[in-house]
Image (cartoon, rainbow, N blue to C red):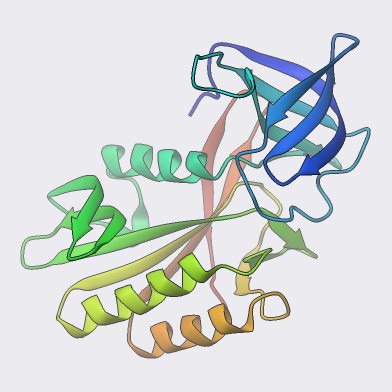
Length: 229
């Protein structure tokens, strides 16, 4: 997946709040939207190289979005929506190994009072899939979430309920960086999410994870990695 046609380089200066960054671009300071409201520990450090997309519009408060951060010798995507996009690309190609055999799929499907990232139609069953973007990696271990997530807990409860009704249900963790070798719940940050992830596992909600190859211009699925409960 390409980042877009208008991508610029910058130097990260400061994050005044979780949705805004100050960035130096071509010697001038600009403001950029930060799409990931998480804490992004170890990434948003002054002086880091960043990549921004330029998408001005009448309803936007800033013309730029901060999408990549250079961390060590790799690029890390901090745009959660990219995770859904790379999954969609893989589904369209039929190359997402953990969910082989479906006949069709749809995005943003409403079921009852809930909306799920993807619904897959298999021959004899429907599958509901929620995608979670993982940006925090420590010692090769991806940790989700990096901030408490009531929404994440809600999704797990909904997927458990669907599984009990006979549907397939899955959580797909996408680490938008190449150095993740496994995924775990970040119980120090959100023990409630970890508790419900364990319940989901016991209820046979399917748990999958992939890391990504991230270049200065692209994000794509790389390898399937384990989810350790």
